[in-house]
Length: 349
Ligand code: EPS
Image (cartoon, rainbow, N blue to C red):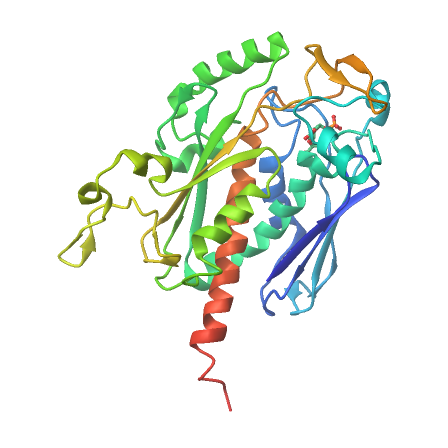
């Protein structure tokens, strides 16, 4: 399975190609849109107020509502970009933003929004992930759920994960939504931003996915998560907590044929064990702020930057469906690779 996206936050269109998807799965734009809405801006007061329709078009790889096995191409028009909001920073570098490293690498400044580095790009990951999630559920009964496990310094338990879509926070601790509302309202008024941690689990994943050295399942999940904009860290299973554990605690004992714990996060030596695959992802605070900051312009002069436009005080909250989508794409890819190697002796005659 190969996935790539194209388009910038303020370009005419964003899109993706998902190549290698198996033929024969029914899919509609409504099913994809149902996932896109979960990630979209403008759904609550706690996100960017940019109002994109996110009307997805399937332009290749689906005929009469069914995947054909050819590359699946999806596109979405950008309908609510306001590039003039960024004219004041046309030559300015926002500290903590891709502005700096893109400028150093390419020497070309596309100041319209975040360009390729914008969370806008993640729309296409969720669109492609909608197909992968459906395929995983339909063919292998695999479900993937992510939730907000930390907002700034507020730590959250998984709670009742059937309720994560009942609030804009993707929290299973639905009783704590007023506390989160209050926190975000205060933050927004201050003009500042904050980070977030998203945790996720994939259930019913069979044992044996992944490769032992190169192409480890955990390495590829980590790569997929790190490729999401604003990601700063990924943990598999116990993650960094494993540092303070003893081996006698961390090893997941097998009692009467059942694992007694899951500190490994469902992956041992790069290969799935059949337990739930668990991971967490750290998202940094958004760097586009109306609070003034010291920086430079593209001529190297010292300046003070103030960013206008519509931004997320915590882009990590909206990352929940993106984490689910990336997890789905990686696990689906590994199922297909596993079958190619392990079941290739049994071709139909
Ligand atoms: C983003 C900045 C804002 C967000 C955008 C992500 O866009 P703009 O530059 O137009 O103000 O609205 O998010 C989306 C449009 C989206 O669909 O996720 C950023 O800098 O990451």
